[in-house]
Amino acid sequence: MKIGLIGAGAIGQYLLKYINGKHHEKMEITSVLVRDFDKYANLQKEYRVKLYTDIDEFIDSEIDIIVEAANVSVAVDLLPKIIKRKEVMLISVGALANQETLKLVGQSDNRTLHLPSGAIGGLDLIQNAKGLGNLDSVSLTTRKPALSLIDELPDKEMIVFEGPASEAIDKYPKNMNVSIVLSLAGLGMEHTKVTLIADPNVDKNIHTIHATGNFGEMELTVKNVPLLENPKTSSLAALSVFSTLERLAEKVKIG
Image (cartoon, rainbow, N blue to C red):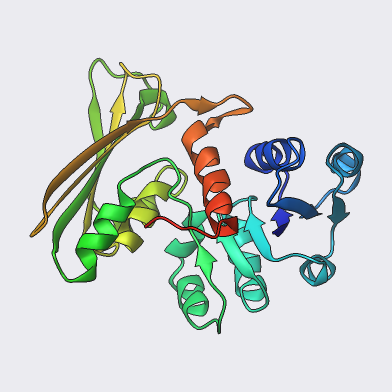
């Protein structure tokens, strides 16, 4: 499987390292779209890729799927165009908080938008329960180091937001990507309850998902270790992208 990569930041270079750098037998990154050619020119020799700065030339290159690993604004700008011509994996899922973008994606013919699970888990169970209307409630409690959310360190944990995912995404666009994926897998942005906590006693992001329905009840907590290359990105988020690509390349698929 030949992959086109948009962006060469922390996750982009993680993928280059573990796919091309380790000579993966079933997939290869062949094309990389960047804004600054000179800044990333060394990637061509190090990872045997071709760099592009023109979006049309990039899309027309010999690739089977495009992985967006840039940022939300780039994703909002480019997604409507690239989804018309290629399969896409979207990492900056915050782009889907934009209803127009979500609508355009839904109108794309015969192209699939793949969303990795990112920094959380349990999405397979939630999708299974949702399938026959057996899902009653879904909530997400996210606990983050206090100073990543507020300016002054509080004496104790502080709830900075409580409400539907749609409002959480609007108020905290850089902190609530996981709520978008969870909402799309489950009951939607209006019916997914989100609680965001600034906690002076934690040093990592902690996500707890609670879901109920006819199937029973689920509670899952994930404590994310930061990615070594970029502490602002969770290691699990990068792993989920790599794992999703591997599953696409496999003949036997689970779930």
